Image (cartoon, rainbow over all chains, first blue to last red; front, side, top):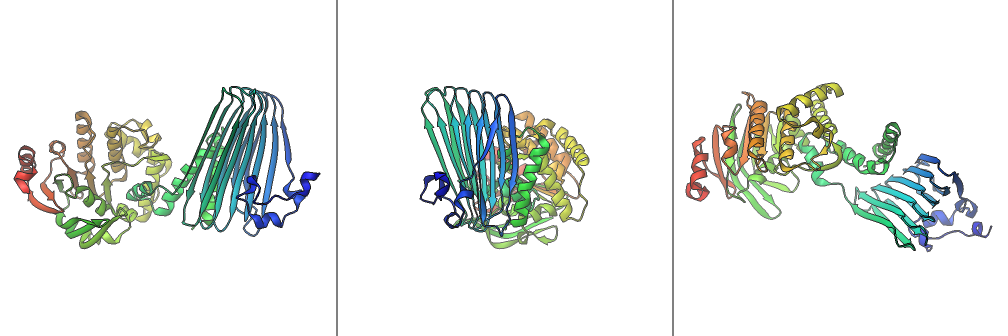
Length: 255
Length: 247
């Protein structure tokens, strides 16, 4: 219970980009609550979710601790849209040959702070993980991805990949990322990439030159951009639905 | 159709077009030739309204309207097609999606009904066949991983599908081998040779003009048209060079 009594602040490394005012006003028990998920050996569990607590809401913190048994798979695809502060945190421990697949998208304007925080623990050999996070921010909003990967000493043949890209639609928006790799095994593959940029102006112009108005061009480009995060979704209808949900947010809110 | 009068344009602080005047009538194909740095590509981008290319003087009338007053996408919907010297790659967007959005946006702007998915695919297949481009290429992402020649043929498929009134083709012949040059030349003729349409071909070389016969040839140098003539001018330039003929 000692854990529950302490409120994190932005001085804590894992909370450095969080909304400090939200944390200060929060109930420690709520902030420190973890959902627990056990994925049995050889089985697959999936989560697809759209998080929008509404513009009036102060926000929410959703923390999930997952244990994936031997040869099992946990896949999570998440969109963070509304709410002043929204944080989704996933801690995954992978047994031998297990897999973790994560696709995350943040979309927001105003002064929203939207973040994904993952900690992937490759505890045993032959486990794999792949994480793709895309952030589309405008206004004064912030999109964050803190991804920690831990590879234990005997977790040989680990294959872990992490990729974050952000598009800032307006001056004033920002994105932060902090890949953190802690590797104690020697025969592993760990790849990470990060890029923060703007919408491709040349592509927008090319579209305009073919008759596509700027607002549709922007939507097509953003759709292509966030599509990366949902690429691993096997079911096409689910993939389309996730994309549509994300784009709706853009329609209702973006400038 | 296209009437350019005393056009001045700058890129950054540099004046590139310095009083360019040119008129292309309906049913005509004009070629613009000229040395590197003459302003050929700048002319095409100014006509296409690319950001960063600033018009500082003169006028451009297109189908009776003030072209310079229109946004780039409005120019396209009015019937202007700009063939890019370097077609742009758009990762994550398929050619089919891109072109269907483009065609239906143009149709909407003209008050026409949108084409259904089936109607669009039929049209796309027909134009791809005309340019001998594999339909599979159209399902792929826009220009991503295409060779230079495939990009140019794909541009001509776009032109076939969008069916513009007027095409400004900027070095469409560059990057094409001899066979592809013929296919592209035949494609331009099939799509654009029409009493109601016009073409401005921007090129370095005579070779495309063997397939697409121009009615007039202009030499662009230092930001202005310095000489105009018939098709024979292109041949003379080819044998004698720009400096001897026009500069």
